[in-house]
Structure formats: C-alpha cells, structure tokens
Image (cartoon, protein in one colour):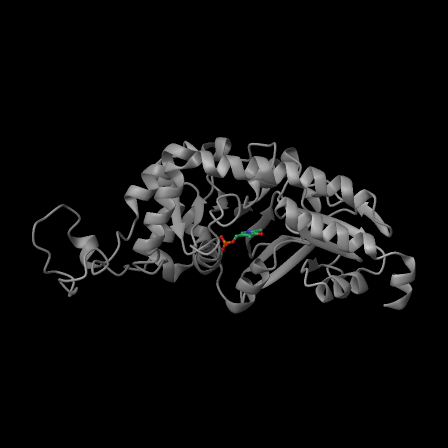
Length: 351
Ligand SMILES: *Cc1c(COP(=O)(O)O)cnc(C)c1O
C-alpha cells in the first residue's frame, strides 16, 4: 500500500479547493439565481457540471470502472499536467520515463520545473524495468510509461510493467492512448489491484474526437479526489460533454472505424515491405507504423513536396532514419504508397 500523504505536495494536501455555485447546490431546482449566469440562451448560459457525472456514468459502463475512479480533462494533456503539479515539488522532485516516448510528458515536467530523467528502451523498444527502477531516487514521484508506445508503436511487456508498478514507491502513469488498436486489453481490468497506478486514455484517437478534447484518467479514488481538487472548476465544457455522450451512444461507429483502420494498417504494412530503401517496419499495436527507411530526412522532404505529411522521427533516440506514418483512409494510404514507389534510386540520387 502506498502512502499518498507522503507522495503528495504539502500545499496540495492542505489546499481548500474553490467551491463553485454548482458544488454548493447539486440538486435539481426550478430557479437558478446562484451563479451570475445570463438567464437567456439556454442551455449554453449554464455552467457545466464540474464533475461531469452523466458523462462519467456512461464512461463507467463502457469501461467497467466505477465513477469514483474516473477523472475527465481537456485532453490527456490536462491529467498529465495535473499529476505533475499534485506530486512533484518544483526544483526538488523528479520524474522517470521511457525514451523514446510521447513528448508531452517532458514538456509538462519542464513547464513545472520538475527534473525529467529518461531511460532508453532496448534496441527493439522493449521495457527494461530494472533500469527504470535504478534511475529512481528518493525524490522520484512519478514514472511515465506509454503502451502501446508512441512513436515506437509496440505494446510494452505486461510483466515488465507489473514489475515496475509493484516495486516503485511512487505513482506510475500508464498512457494507453492507443489501446483500442491493440489486441491486448491493457491494465484497466487490473486497476483495482494497484493504488499507485494512473491509466490515461483519450477520445482523440480511436473515437475520432481529437478536436473535441476529452482525456480520461483512471485511478484509486483518493488520487481522483486530488485531481478534482486541483483542476479548473469547469474544465470540460458542455459541448464536449454532449458530443462525447453521443459518441458513446454510437459505440458501433467507433468499433467500425477501429476495424477498418486495422485492415488499412495491415495493407500499409504489406505495401511498405515492397518499397525500396525500407529497412524495417516495426510491429504496431497502434494506428500508426514506425518505419526505418534509408535517407529518411530526404524521403520526408520528398513527401512534403508531394503534399503528404508523415512524422519525421529521425532525430529521436533509437529512431534514426525512422518515419512515423499514421494509418489513413484507403485512398490516403494508396497516395502515400504511390508516391513512395516513384521514389526509385535515380530519384533518390536527385534529392
Ligand atoms: C495522441 C496521444 C495522446 C492524446 O492526447 P490528447 O490530449 O488526449 O489529445 C495521449 N498520449 C499519447 C501517447 C498520444 O500519442
């Protein structure tokens, strides 16, 4: 069992959170004259539910996780920033994370003036749990893991993840933004066994709602309470809450998208093997493919000139000459492959 009081910053432990009008009266009434809202322009004149209970009930049923274990934020960015602010004293505490991984963890740490220590994955992008644990010291409050990992696309070994959760004296943040594209279930079914685990998921990828901004964090209720205490009172607006509830009603649409994206991923993988200069296609549990290709910088620029944008990851540790390609529609993938096929050796010599 972890001792949260020891991990949480003192100022957060003792914080009395802002109490909004909607916090102080939560029932149903006829006349609302308590929040200085405009009485016209229904329903947008009203502040949203600060705890998004209706939406959380839907997410609870969807994920089979109790409402008290769910936090919702403005994308995953919000819970990432919040956990750093809750647990890490600036200039004192530190964070350990895998490398390469999603760039936002490091940026959020730097904004908060919290030291960020990265530990390389193995050459084939496997998690090496003891190397991560050895990088921790008495001031390490958080470990960030991402599985399936961005940009490497692989699902990290579950035994290695469990080893870290069970042996680290702080909080493990496991980002599962791409879990819907994986054949694995991820760690939500085990959440109740690990009071020091925070799982992040998002509506930005499989659900096709990146523009709507809704991120989820799942954790022990005492961690969720801390996050609720520190967040902006009305952090998820009415439009987002409504749009995501509609999307959940239409779960079949998301499942159909995932199915076709996985078929497209398979097609794209097969096609990429035929492209000259491709040295390695890394196995993917996500909606993107990491490809090692000769002269990746030049290939990247060539594709830009063809008005096709992929992500150049060449400068990322262990990803020399790697491009990260998001799986698109069948037509978009075809355009990419057609462009790459034109890039024969003589063309390559010319660029
Ligand atoms: C895309 C992505 C997210 C999603 O972030 P949002 O703020 O929810 O859009 C989270 N984590 C990783 C690793 C990602 O690649």
